[in-house]
Amino acid sequence: METLNQLAHGFSVAFTPVNLMWCLLGTTLGTAIGVLPGLGPALTIALLLPITYQVAPEASFILFAGIYYGAMYGGSTTSILLNTPGESATIVTALEGNRMARSGRGGAALATSAIGSFVAGTIGTLGVAFLAPIVVKFALAFGPAEYFSLMVLAFITVSAVLGSSSVRGLTSLFAGFVIGMIGVDLQTGQPRFTFGMGELLDGVDVIIVAVGLFAVGETLYMASRRYAGKDEIVPLKGSLYMTAAEWGRSWKAWLRGAAIGFPIGAMPAGGAEIPTFLSYAIEKKLSKHKEEFGTVGAIEGVAGPEAANNASAAGVLVPMLTLGLPTSATAAIMLSAFQSYGINPGPLLLTTQANLVWGLIASLFIANVILVILNLPLIGLWVRLLKIPAPQLYAGILVFATVGTYGISQSPIDLVILYLLGAAGFLMRRFDFPTAPVIIGMILGPLAETQFRRAMTISNGDWSVFYTHKLSLTLLVLAFIGLAGPHIWAFIEHRRRRGPEHVPGDA
Image 1 (cartoon, rainbow, N blue to C red):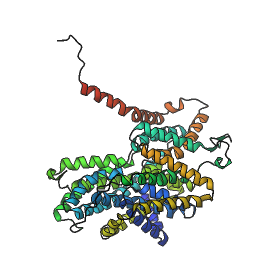
Image 2: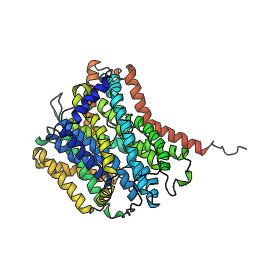
Image 3: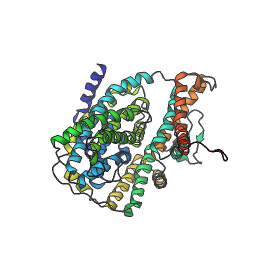
Image 4: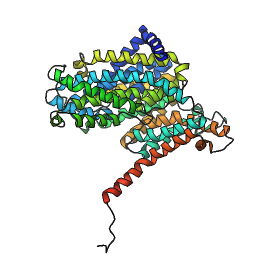
């Protein structure tokens, strides 16, 4: 009952004319960004982070959430009509969606994607509203030792999920640690990693790091690959409505996809890639039209993964809001926005910032409705966005990033740092190092250091505090399994494939 009252209060916040305007702007911009290949919600939110210095927190996060959900919707258009997934989570949509488009059923593919996104997004948002208070009650039992162990678990799992390998992910995470340590140590008053530069005594602004790595670095990387090859846009044929048979094949896939996506997205080691591939595998196994998979395109292969993708996007908000743990690149950028307002997500956020949290959750329901209205009737407009010349698009992003960053403090040093980080972001993308762990390390690294120091102070320097507390020990064991488990499993599989060893001379 308390959750329903809080949600009603959230709708009173979200339904104010100003916040409705921000929600509409976010969903429209997010859809457009999702349609444009190579761009994504993380880049867009990073680009807009400087507005946090001018806009109220509720309005900013309603805008960012609209962009987040809108990009999930818009990404399916690119995957289906262009066969170019904007993010790794939409790879599966391209498998069957593009085949459907080439066989003249692109309208049905886009329709099941949009409606499935609405259904799964609504279910996922309900999950956030009702699960978040439960997680908060559990998290309130955490002390400094438990929080430090939880962050160690988050560092291990998130680095593995967001990177192609745990080594690359942890390397990026360590780079974030170093950036986060720049400035004056608040406990000792000693400068760290400033190299004698007075401009670095206050540290590096997280917004500059986010914009540099995601906006500048990603844009430079996309521009460098512009001539790698051009994809053909499949013309949209037929109506944007599904037949009765297609409805019958889609609705069960939507529900299954939502049931798979939300729980995995809500895990500290979640993400959208695993549920989308899992949903695709389940739909292929359960389908009565297996012959359509990989040939003319099966509508279940679009409906299920798209629903899983959107439900997991909602699930990602649970650990971010209740524990302060981002499990996706977009969540990492949103966490940096919280920090720019001086707000630390965690168990107390739902009570200390009730207007912000419940207004944000309520706006997600509104965004879902707006997105269905925007996506289906205006699909022709979104397709035209694919024809924007790449040079103008990339130049616009760089100009916007430069002006926004300079507007934070009018410091030329900030621009130098921005483009140095942009070059680093380009090299990281070029050599397949994930950039999201850098932001996570920069934000959570100092927090982990603070919790570690508190735990050691309380225990008078006794390290056993981390393994004598049962919850802390459990979290550290899970972290070890997350780090060593894949390698142990790979070794076991390797030994199994080789079979028993034969000693020479044996009969």
